[in-house]
Length: 254
Ligand code: BTN
Image 1 (cartoon, rainbow, N blue to C red):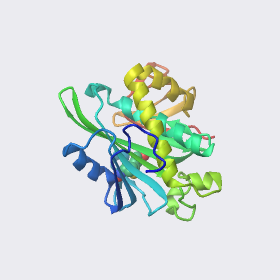
Image 2: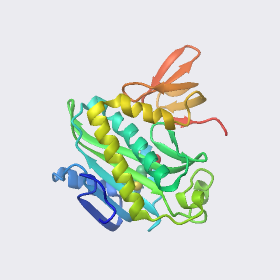
Image 3: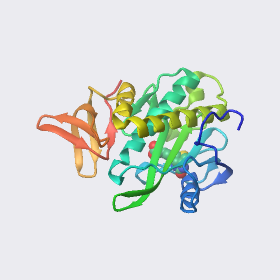
Image 4: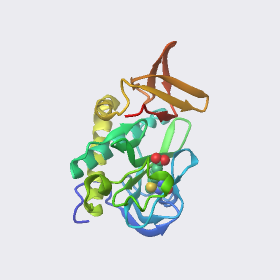
């Protein structure tokens, strides 16, 4: 891997042309004892998985569809830190590689000019308070063209090529993503979550704005204040501060 500048991330790399989902392969590898930092990357996915049971559109040779195996020495209750951490690292990588301004939509969507360019899916296995392993799935629209997108995604999705007007070299972008992810992960393990939280807040699209969070228990509308120690989004409503652990966020127009 001529581009790779990491200690561990991507040192074991499995490259697949076509698969249902890199998440499925990564779960298998993790169960078989693959080391931390193992990456599974595919050119195309038949049934890419998104959050909330959605499908992730993964056309051939135009994206980065990858899954990373982590074995963090942290309690299960802190697993949401990994989602936040991944969005910080990937944001950094895109900005370095393209110069584009990337915003984070809590918990883990990356937006450019208000449209989604990257989604992150964290899946884990553990029991009691122990994490066995975590799979961080990253789906990035790199060279997807406007006409490639299914019609229903055109208004909400974008790609790096659309935003920059040029074709992006995927292998070197992948190397930068792994480098930034590893750096962010090491900072997290050494300095703790507060260091990551600061970086997250610098890139957050919604802080200080009135948003609506749609949770399984109903909607919460108020001002997005910050994230707490558990990675929950704190929303200031007329009746007090509400922590939101899992939701879809509606941002205001503009
Ligand atoms: C989201 O819903 O925003 C998360 C999307 C995550 C997609 C990536 S693509 C690589 C990996 N394999 C999958 O099946 N899903 C993740």
